[in-house]
Image (cartoon, helix red, strand yellow):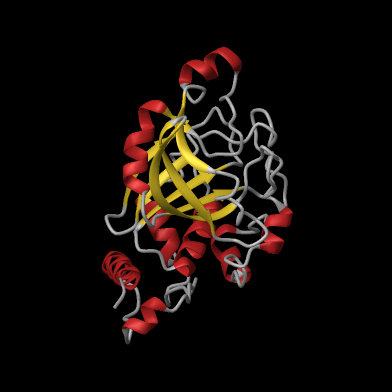
Length: 259
């Protein structure tokens, strides 16, 4: 069994114990990406992902059920070797703590903090996204974290974009996670928003080291927005069981504006 398979097995076993999921027949059942929203016989029961969302009290922290569900769904398809998932919710104002770092084995929110978007993506809100070099825009979708290096922003975390045509130029664009002095409450107080990067999901200098230590080498990052073109192109979110999703969320509003 590979390290990635071992982590995925551990995640699913932990969730099974907590939420009473069905018994899996084999390791292949766990390692094959078959995310499901199947409800229990009680029609009022919450599906697996929603029960986890509730237990983490994410609604109170500002993360929508829709954003969490998409992240959860895509993460299971990625077969990563690290059980930590970070969600950057770019439907929210940059004034908000819109980065959520979650350990799916420990079933714990490790950190909820600020994250910047690219300067050409928008001012207070991120509204425009690109995979192009020199666009200075953020790219949506799923990333795998790689190793660290010391750059002009100090300790930085390389990111590999996992979605072709959406964020797969992240490495050549030098899209990394790093600390920046424009990500701070004092900057928000002075300008009404966070500062902006050249496309990187930049975080505060005070959070950068501990955040990178949580995420390096095989964790997942999902940058989310209700952007029509992203959902049309994303292979990792293809096959979403929208009809069953509506049982829990109502209309998931896939193609609405972020504001």
